[in-house]
Amino acid sequence: MTIDNTEVMEKEELLQQFRSRYENIVNENRQLSAKLRENENTALKLLGAIETLEYLTKDGSEVEAQVEE
Image 1 (tube, helix red, strand yellow):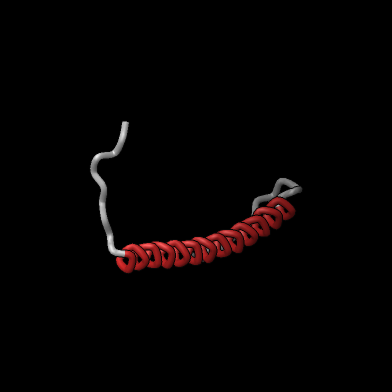
Image 2 (spheres, one colour; image 1 turned 90 degrees about the horizontal axis):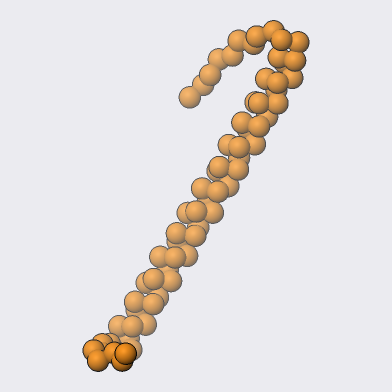
C-alpha cells in the first residue's frame, strides 16, 4: 500500500511546530520531576511516622496523635 495523499508544510512552520512540541515536553518533564521530588519527600515523612508509631506501639499500648492537614 502506498500513500497517495501528501502534506506539504513550509520549513519554518514545521520547525516552529517541532520547537513548540519540544518546549512542551521539556516543561512537562520539569513538572513531573518536581512532583516526583515532592512525592519522595512525602513518602519519607510518612515512613518516619510509620516507624515512630510502630516503635511507640511495640508494647501494645495505643498512642494518641494530633493529625494536621
